[in-house]
Image (cartoon, rainbow, N blue to C red; front, side, top):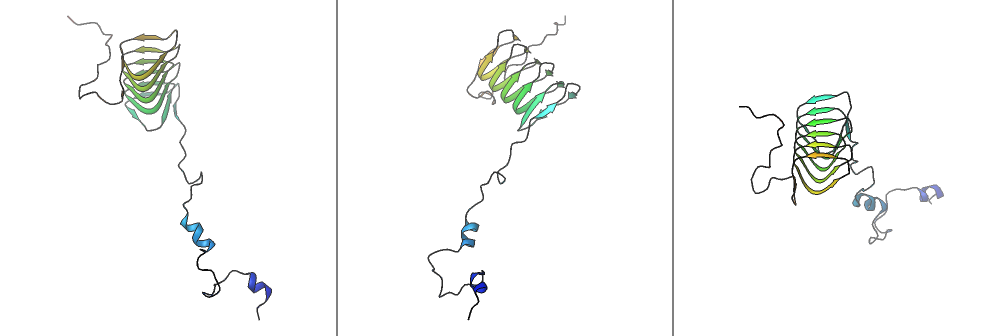
Length: 167
C-alpha cells in the first residue's frame, strides 16, 4: 500500500493515529520564546570624542562617553571618562565618572574616581568616591544617597567661580 519513502516523509497526520497528549514538534518550538544572544539587545560601544574635537553645547546619552578633546557644556551619561588631555567646562553627571583630565564645574555621580592626573575645580556630589594621590581638587565634597537627583527640591551648590570680584 504505502511505499517506504511515503512513510518517512512528513505529512498530514490522521487524527486517529496520533497521541493527542503529546504536542507536535512544531507547536513546541513556537510556544517557547527565543532568548538567544542574538535576540537580546547588545550594549553599544562607548562614544569617543577625539583629542582634536571641540564641542560647545550639552551632551546627553544613556550609554558611555570617553572625552579626549574639549567640551564646553554639560554632559550626562551612564559612564563618563575624561581623558588625560581632555578639558570639560560644565557639569558632569553620570552613574560612574572617571576623571583623568581637567573638569571645571560640578561633578555628580554614584561612583566618582579622580585619578592621579585629575584636575577638578568644582564641587563633587557622590555616593562613593575615590581620590588617588596626586589628584588636584578645589571645591567641596558631599555624599548623597542619590546624587543624580536634586535633594528636597533645593538646587545643588553652584561651581566655584575663579573670576575676581568686580568693584
